[in-house]
Image 1 (cartoon, one colour):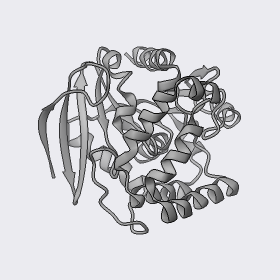
Image 2: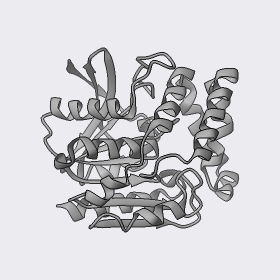
Image 3: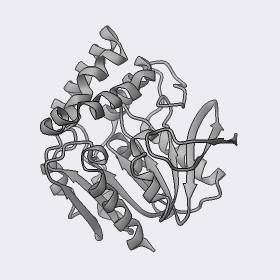
Length: 286
């Protein structure tokens, strides 16, 4: 176990300074970036993404928080430590992230997760709610998959097995955006697909299996003793707006941002509004 730090420039289009580091634990290698000042903020990306999904926000977020932005195992620069069918689960990734924070000497942090990253944030709250200063679901849900959703994910697994990871992402990623945005911003959609070129079938299949297996965790919203941030996309099909409306009243203290005309990718579809929601939430915790 340990951390190796190396200087690194930005991984995305914006100019900002972060340090690239590597955390190793029990045979898993986790690459992450960190930088900034203020409250510790752990940012967790979603399925088919890596830490670069937050690059548009990081220059501003680093002014109000110490950002820790990992590539989850199997994503970005973090290698996939398993083969399909013999994978870690969301709970294991959650424990790994707590161990990372332990290694960094961080007792309490803010944890915000996009999509699948939100599922991991829910796990982290379940495992150690007393270590959270605040947390949030960014286009994510505490509901378990419906039987219909599980069937859809299983069909996706079959597609990946037959056609590969890249063919799947080429078909899946455009549907994460609002149709009008995707039509007017084809380069943004294409860049996200290009960023996913390194995914292995094993990693994507395992993520799907982990998401299918996850339980309902609305109890974590109900028992939260710290503020919870919700960022909702009005046109989101992956984390439906109607589902999230049922959840925003569950915590005693919730911050809610609804992004109009936005689907699942608010940080790219309306970056200024998305960024403002995160900054306001962080400032409210000070």
